[in-house]
Image (tube, rainbow, N blue to C red; front, side, top):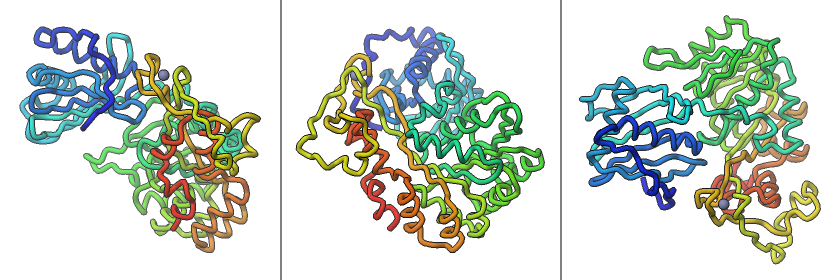
Length: 416
Ligand SMILES: [Zn+2]
């Protein structure tokens, strides 16, 4: 794994690893957690062990250890996660409830894999503080917020959230659950894994090792008489069909699935042999999303776009006076660890299913027609939603293109 942009941690002194590998491991994971990392990697090369973190979706170098010190740290983590120290030739999984010196707490999912020079470790950091992730902070526009609220206010039906992994789907679903969790409803989730604890919500985890998968758990959860069901991911026929039945019988069902844009989720559901009529009658809406990095406000660089006066024509009516004259690019300063970016935010398509769209779904009309109808009735596709964020100075044009590939910025190609 190459990292061209390393975070400057050279000045930081790690405790002597030979004397106390535990203290060094605690500090390294604590540092990564405090930076907001979603993962930490220990990557073993011929003469060095790289300690890296995934920050805002990008892999960054944190520390470099000698191979001997790296081995000591890996052994310490295996012991902490109650893994077999002698097992170095097969991939292995472990779990460790980590409480760092700063008091930061994470549920670590550890996976090891043998590589050319030894073992690599991948640590997923779960249980990050999501308190701030309510609707207002997800990156939805005002209109999109209204659309999502109106879907959630329905007593029953299906809401789908789509996008690739790492696109922020879980964060959005948790925000939905927190909104619905008013003490008057019974909320059940089926997750893989449970990413953070939501007080008051009954959360269940898939465990394939004992044969407990989404369809089995979903059947059981329905017998728990929930009002709201969150399905971590629809990835098989039985789950898709059971979800539709539950949504049609008065449950509010929230689920994620893999589809590039909103309209793609309809085809994905039909591919699971869901009856188009039942899909049409239960589907409330589809949210599709990506995460873009937000420019650091301390160092962003203005870029004059007066030479290209038409780039924001499509979103002109959504711009405030003065927006879209200048756009910004990243530079890098102390505050943003020289990345040029401060945090991440979502770019969304929110499709509210109208009566006319129900007819189109029921008749198995082409996705293109459904998508066009959504846009005709005011939906911002990724292109418009993304351009708006660039015109508002939230992110750069390059970042938008990195995260939402050109083919999805052009609806014609996405549905071809
Ligand atoms: Zn900066």
